[in-house]
Image (tube, rainbow over all chains, first blue to last red; front, side, top):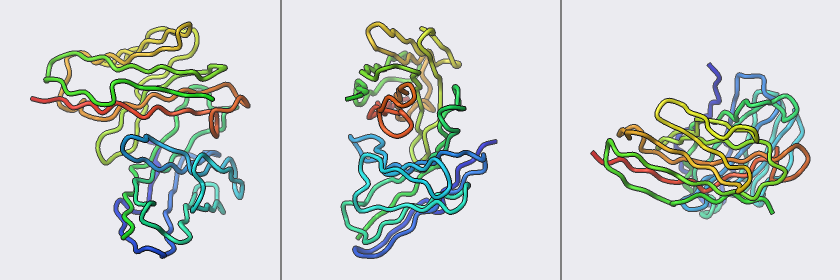
Length: 116
Length: 117
């Protein structure tokens, strides 16, 4: 069965800390995504990676960076955490559009991050 | 700008009743539309996908419809169960290179469904 694993289900950090959220997929997917999900706003794309070391900004990249050194792993970094980054963070992976056909994105179960 | 609007925002129904969730989109050119179910504390999981030529797709008690002319989709849940309590997210994919966010995906904000015993 396909699997996207996020390293932490719950995380509490302090304002100003550097925060790392890790995501690993075992499906050999080229595409990986980081979203945040807030009540009333739905899922919003932070960053997208279509290959190792390749990344694209999503709709809300400010305050975040990403790293993709290996195909299976995609990290989200909060350089200096702020309280408005308290949210649910979801990682997803998929085949590239050209080969995806009707295959969906596969999501992890999320990391609920609280910044105090 | 590509957009996906879902209604209602939230819905409460009694166990055993039917319900219908709506999704209207302005994504163009259209490739496919997918409904996801997201249980509390879990990631979204795909329920159905429909392409331009399909107007109905079923997955157990879930039936999705698509009207590509009016750019509307609905998700009908029959004989609801407590386990149907979840958020339902409509996601529309644009054809490659036509925008709509990275990888051509545009997300709705979801409908939060609560089934009461």
